[in-house]
Image 1 (cartoon, helix red, strand yellow):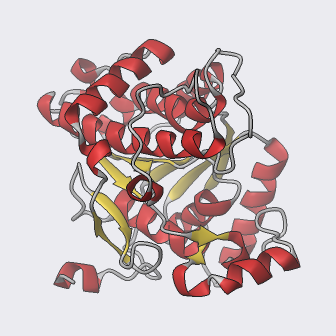
Image 2: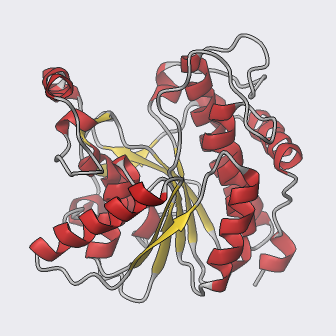
Length: 320
């Protein structure tokens, strides 16, 4: 472990006063805890999600928990955003651009437990790929100029499953041979490959935005603090998750890698961060899978996302 890694304390982040971060899927799980940790360090956080009621509950819970620890919350905002719906993505991006400074975006929202049968969105895209990949690709492109103005950062949510089950997403929308597990793993291969490709394109265009990938290891609800309206596992869920305690961690700790990738000034574009022991532990640099690192795979996925979302990232406009 390097001296820099040893110096980083995920429980005591650097002062983030004056910075603003957007977190997708912030009403529960990793997105909620990342939002809470950012706010505890003084950042303004825009929490997004599909349900106004769940967003309100998450914001109230975070405010109350931070107050219990004598933390003054400078600003927890909420915004409706459904990443499976490209119209919702465009509307949310327009609102965010009007709110001013944007230092980073955590592309966290996603379907972890896909449906057993293939489903499509109103845009005609496969549901898991639309939610986990296409919506985030479109959102990142729509917010690129705002991020560049603040020399900000994009963090894409990867998964250790991409190394355990390497899948080349030759059919990313799984028109044929759909399975829930394949849909999930392919979406994470895609987000990792796109995050790496974004870094290459941003560097080539001289756009001052860093693109980073992070994964949470094996983070489970049953090992996570119970919070009304945010994390309410059943007794059976807690029992079964605790049986796996040697190889798992809470979602609160799973968010550590995501937050470090988003705010640590020493993190470079094109890096991947994850838990020290892969499934659990403090954040450290990680290695993307061979498939996600393949340049041909990344190029194919990028073009496919451009066509599916009708979004061309405005590299020229974002250049500084």
